[in-house]
Amino acid sequence: MLVLGMAFKSTLGFFNEMLEPIPEATLEVTSLARLHFMGLLPSETRSRVKTKILEAIDASLSGLIAKQHELSQLRIPAEYLPIFNYQVKTLEYGIMSHTAALEWLKSLV
Image (cartoon, rainbow, N blue to C red):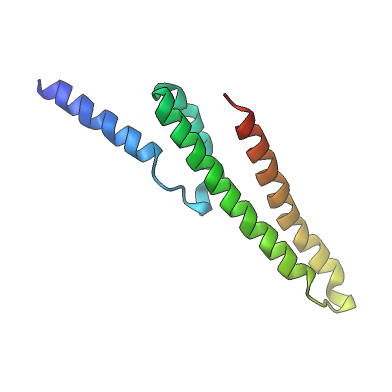
């Protein structure tokens, strides 16, 4: 009985962990790890995990888009423009990768 109880507690811990908020700093890695283990979950729990992942990515994407808008309003001196333009490319990459992740995850069953 003790082993069964430990297995049940462990299973509940796993389900709870899959539904915890996703830290933005580890968004991609955590999302992919949860996706990797989603097949072990009951259907209704998979749906909740997928929703949590989508919400986390969408919130992060919104922040990136807001930052892009904020930066587009800046007046950058000509001598710093080449530096700024390359630095903004990392933001563009983040927006592109978040958008692709959202589209791909939405297409999953």
